[in-house]
Length: 381
Image 1 (cartoon, rainbow, N blue to C red):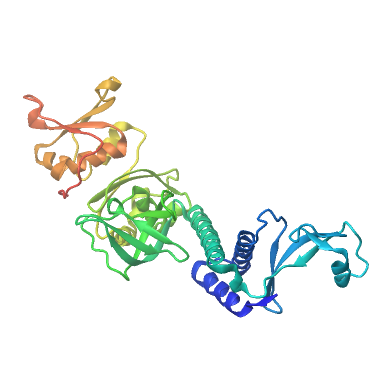
Image 2 (cartoon, one colour):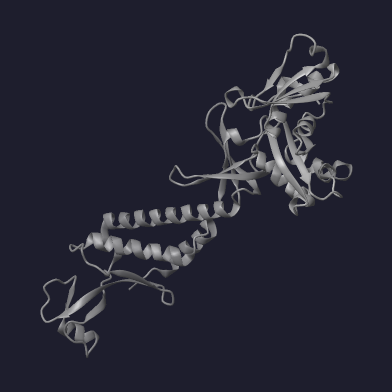
């Protein structure tokens, strides 16, 4: 047995603190690595049943191999002579298998290659343990909001960077596409993010987090609106262009509860909390309706709507379509700057929306097709 306990335990404690890998698990990695090094060094690589044992009380580690008791030894790695075995256990008999210590007198005789083998195995096992830890953390947090501290900024190109966020036991990566447009991220700042997915393509899996995902809005409303958290108010749909504007449709089965008022809160305090979390992103809280006409009218808020006509076009022509007429002074408000208001209304309701003013109804029809997509921009209202 070789006494290396203090250093081994110190290393195990450090790994438990830094990577949350249990001490016993690390010690088992070390024992496996020592066995692998031993097997690689001895001439008979086929020796089976070899194991390394760490004694916590003495702080010693040793290598033990099973050997059959024989009259005459023909293979020293598999067998032990009867006389030698009787020195250890007086009543031993031929054919018995004993576990004999085969620890080299000096670990240095393993040589450089043996040491590298041990190091490689420990590194591999630690990487596997780290992968499992990341996967467990992701499964526990998937689809939820969490708060973390920005640890570093990884520059990918002149226009792209990854924000690495300390989530406690693991790190989260927020790629450029999941960041808020125009937001400046600084090391040390605390941010609230949505745990989106696990990307397992590299050596170590990455937990992808987002501030641009629509579900972040849902999580924030659940956080700040008790009626949503307890199910009294239900979020039916969310349409978001991150960093610019969000429309959220809400509904309550309880006639005594105003879903829009519950989300806004007294003097707007609840909605203000959500807006602050989203760096002053505009939020329209819309009353959901099972009547498509009412729903579309509500979704085009804050514009006033005159009439809504519904059409069921063939799928190849776009499917469900609504033609909306608004007062002349409401046309730009209904469309929104860059078409954002009508685009979000279309996403929210699932209807393709064409808008025209009252003065256009008798003449040439100039419409805006609200397709699901388009680039975000600032808008009016």
